[in-house]
Image 1: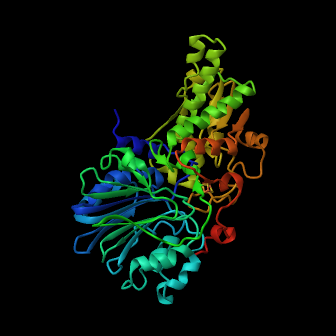
Image 2: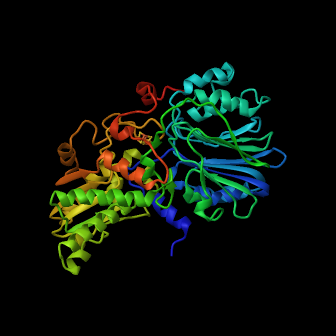
Image 3: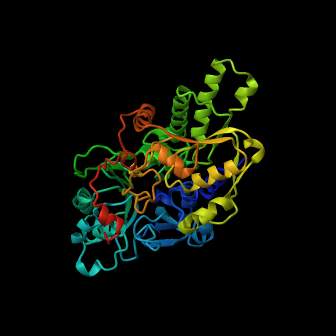
Length: 502
Ligand code: SF4
């Protein structure tokens, strides 16, 4: 049986070559008694699907001194260096990075030996320029990203109380920011979520009683806080301080805005075993797949073969198949016919081609290198290919071609989310510029023609949102801007697209 670490590594290796990278995973510890900085390795590995360009760990010792390691690559590529830097700390903050702003060298967490604070961020600020006036002009030249700007603004006048700086500056920040900030002088850890709640953030008491763990996703808590019921979500607009007195809520007067949690976290970004915004991600994807199948059944389409695109389409394909199988059982189909609709591996992926997934220029050839189809399974079949979403369409187009060449009678693409027609400016790496999104300004017939499929069907936005709302125990609302074009935070798209914000 594969370990949790190897499951996540496989997920990272098998991310689609034209898929979406996130812009970061956060993990942190607050220890009552000093403990190894290297404890971050496990949580960061379980968040590596959120960012593969680089990893950073920063530890704060009891006396306030700091130790740091930041470098490119996956967590597993950095384990030896992290272990070499290992020391006993009372605060540890880690970061898996995929850059949407600032380029490769804007490694996080930010914080130098002369800074009073350490900052790690998941999301993207849409108005970093408006934070510049909190930073003295001579310090502005060195800024490398939106996070760096926020870090420098919070760290200016380090002799002042950090909580006052948080209360002054954060209500002026716009966009997506789940933040973990350490105050080295006061030895406190702050967990903050923007008032829209775009990106997830959670915390839990450590099972061994030695403090707290915080992380972007619940998948990261395994090993340190095993009971999922003890994991607590930092709510949109909430700021929590963790110190020797435990967890205390700090009031930040954020503007009153509608909650807009990123629904794409549920569709694709979150690890399947995670609960995101209180919704179990895998279960959400199964329901979306089942909903797609009900539409196909209504329209009279029953495929011979159901093929998941792993890993992102696995749960949607399971849900799709469950719904198809119940329908066929009701209609009196034989066990043999029903068994044929259990999702089958027909598209295999090689995990040994190196890290081609980070090379946008190599995407096309990388797809053909990375995938193989099984002609014995697909020969003469009418196939439903199920994925969680179709973003750029590059991978799907190649796969459809390979399935046809492998002998499929027809290929029908099913996306368990609506067409993505708009860019994301809140921390996911598609901007919609230069024809990047296959569905932008196109109807489904046109999209099917581009991809070369016999048909394409998407789940509707209203059905998808209804599923997410139904599965959460609390009232939930979502950002759907990449599907609907309705942006919850005003964005100067020209500014963001040209990356002239800094
Ligand atoms: Fe998420 Fe899409 Fe909104 Fe970006 S635009 S935050 S990907 S739902």
